[in-house]
Length: 450
Image (tube, rainbow, N blue to C red; front, side):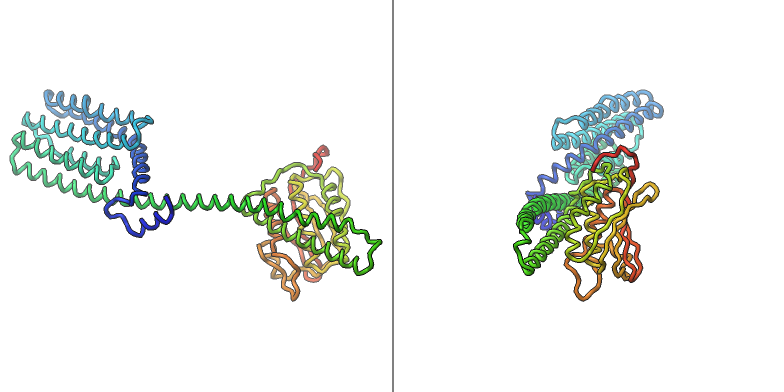
């Protein structure tokens, strides 16, 4: 089953209550399964109704007639319904075979009602025919039989009723009057059954199309995941090789121009690595690939590692990176790699956008949280950006904007949220910025290492 087949069928319509062959088979299987589920409740209700009618017969009909009618209900109608109820909960017969048995059970129940009416006529008791209308409506609406099955079975029951009235010697006028009302009820039921099956078929097409769209989305997500994983590995390999080559360069054997080129190359590699990490982080977040491993993380170790990684890169730009000493026991509940990524993004954001020459990282208590602040002494933020900074693709307005996608702070927000934390910014124009992240504190001295 393909999406274009479903859309083509929707465009053509199905007033004849039949799909093209590739769709008709799956629809009938779905319908049969639905009927089996419906039969459980309907059969139970029908069984109770016939038991109640048997009791009513015993209370309201003449004793001789009541014995016959109650016997028919208890030995014919109720066993047919009980067997149907039992089969509805079994795995065999198949759903399609059960649908046929279900229709035969409807015929059997209707014929038993006709037999009761015939017995009453033979004993000259004026038993009304309205029970036949109840049977017809039950088949069309309560049982949920397909339009064709319900129509044929109901027509047979109406014909059997007319034959029974004729064989009982009912006056032709009465027979024709009763037959007219039964035929009217039958037509109403047929219209209702056609509408019901038409809607069910339309819902089936919509549901199948939705399932295909979900499957397509899942396949696309899996392909994206595979691409992101492969690209993340393959693109980092040449960058790592370049990094290693630059680290082995001996500055004492180079002139000033060569040293400048090396610094520029290192900065370019850093920018490219950061751009790739931003793209991959954003893609992984969108695909739900990042699942944090929350554990107690010592902040002193994290801050020292961040300083060792970034101090030399920032120094090449004329920016000092400082951090305040924190208590060795201070720890947060976080994923250490994600926390490093957050701090790296905030520091790089300050270095590229603030125009500062000093960045300071500080730790302070904030109730049950610990706040990590990245403060710069740059030009601060325009007031209109304060409420938009953590939205995707938001960048500062300048004539020569630094490289980037405007996703760094969005990633900070998403990663912080994954670790049950919060983030924000405090800034005044021309007075620098303080970007902060608060994470749940783990103050016990036995916190595990990061």
